[in-house]
Image (cartoon, chains in turn green, red):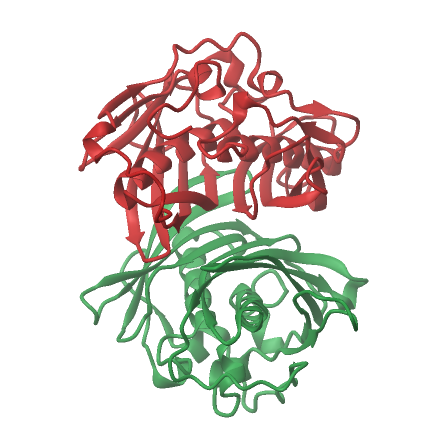
Length: 275
Length: 275
């Protein structure tokens, strides 16, 4: 949700292009807004299964979920606590259509769902997600929105690079994958963008599960618990293969902020399968 | 009903024969594996494992959050091989203790074990501040370090014990909300919620695969939106996809409380494989 607070120059939001628009309740009716959105699948962002790289899918889901939950609790704001995504279709034509709705609004937390379909393939279901956010005091952050809120589609990225190159994700030793916490990957709060966290989780899990003779792997299920902000870096994704079964491998991914006393900042459960 | 006199004598947790050992260093819960708990692959139902996970998580949460209370907000469960026992043990640890949430991690082992887990879970509890006028609970020493519910005495299969009924088709499943399956605050116990969704999701995947063979749930992503209080609970499969090459599939199940204005209580993503 954070890129909408500072659209210009916020590079993660510009890289995974995503337009979205608020769907207010019908005139006279009370209730929270919904959200709809659309994301193209730019060629350099296609993942091993042929669809939008899972990191990009998670970034869009987190972005819509955060915006939906945040608008529901204004003048307070939110931070994502957990993200649960089921990928139902890894081959996608695109563009992808997104629809978000509020499921529960409590005093301390807000929960929404985001459904994703392939508009280029007759609206076939692509993913279903639940985003849980914690309500917080936004402090001095400006939260002055024109409602109903619309975030236009960013223009195509000039000189596009692949997902791993853009995020500066590099292999570490063994089942460890690293990310340098570059300033362009920070959100307006100064911490690593949630989309970068999700992309690192996706890339690290697939890399950890890939054997020497295996082909490409795709992510089919992800649960990310955001535990504390990533502020310093480099960030290490330390992976453990929990087990394998007919539908793929299960990887535990722990993200540590090595420059902040090696603090555990996120814990993720990822299911990957061969494509 | 509080944690101090829960569960009652006639309750699923008593019939499962749960044993709990808890201290500051380690918290574990065990059940004997009996034929009444097994699914079509010969392993313990994922929902029963989820019940054991929820118990060990709840015991940890009570200790850590005292004197506040908690509710399960989400649970992810990955079953990486059939759990056959003869005893099943869940061991839990705290990942993060925040102001509004508590995140735990639970590994589940067959006992005697070979060091490799049969299942892995992460779960989030929402912290519910104790009401100012609530009676002060006993000090923590009032919680016994060792608790035994039981003895294990399920006379019928667990799905029959909780009265999961299939009215026909993957979307026709119902389950009553009785005292036998309530939690400490009068709602449907979180593990039983997972069990109900597991069965509905696995049957939907089996139907989508169309081979005539049953499917077994191996992955659950449970988002608890509201408590099921009245019943009957109704399971509706929102979407399902199948992959014949691996004999697996994924689906999303919504649970609603038909007796409470069809209120949405839970969203569960289910991954399943052919037995």
